[in-house]
Image 1 (cartoon, helix red, strand yellow):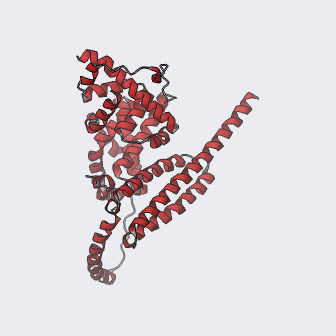
Image 2: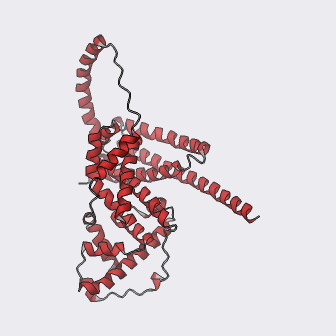
Image 3: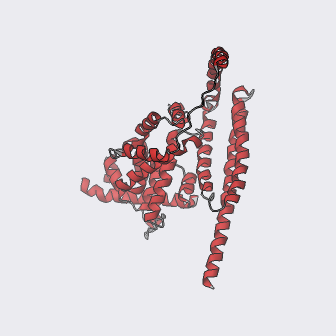
Length: 185
Length: 188
């Protein structure tokens, strides 16, 4: 019975979304966005470019044609699912785990700015090498290996984030303990 | 079908949104508000609170969209924001999200009556039963079965251990069936 209910819920997932958000919510969101965007983007500066523009225009035509071709190939290659659906699934999984952990880490930004800087720069470095792998992927002679390396990188990022979060937890615990001790005195 | 999971069909819309296009923001709102409202509602079990969370989540998401690296889809990213906000809203109401049932579920024998197996399950009925679950149960069950997170992810979202997530889920599932069985009497 339990299995059955579980499967039933999973199979009918979409049908569980039947509530409608209240009308007029968008207007409230818009208002909220407007007050947040008090700093309007700067008007683009006007620079004399007549000659440069001509040059740019002719270049643009050439670049566009090249880009079109290149992008077509690039898209084919960067779609991880085309290379290996299993690996693509892993990539999505780790990316979302990391996303959650990052937001956890972000919580200490105010309390422990120094620690946060240190931790996030570690992650940033790893992420840079991930991005490099990703950039190299379309031209890589062995794409599967590159994807595997990308996933390994994500795994390590998740692991490092774990350790960092552990350290934070320990710090918080010992702080709490100190508090408790001073309170009991 | 499979590719839809890995590539965001609204990638371009998100790019426009990063440039601050109000039209793109509205389009994304139209596309995701219903699903996201339901996500918040399942966690909070309160329509007014869910609407407030949704409003806040969209404003927040659009303000932060520049930082969104589009490694996952906008839907998954947005869902994360909605869930985090919903959980912290729920925590304001309730301190402890781990429900402790005084009944030891493992000890209850699985009495499956034949009739029960034959009852046709209906979405609205199961949905009602989910709403009757205690907060802690409802959240874990919804995250696992409806939002599609695994126990590792849930453990991070709720700041509980993976094991707790697992046992909470098992208990929630059992409780849900109990409720359905009780209700089944009325439905027949």
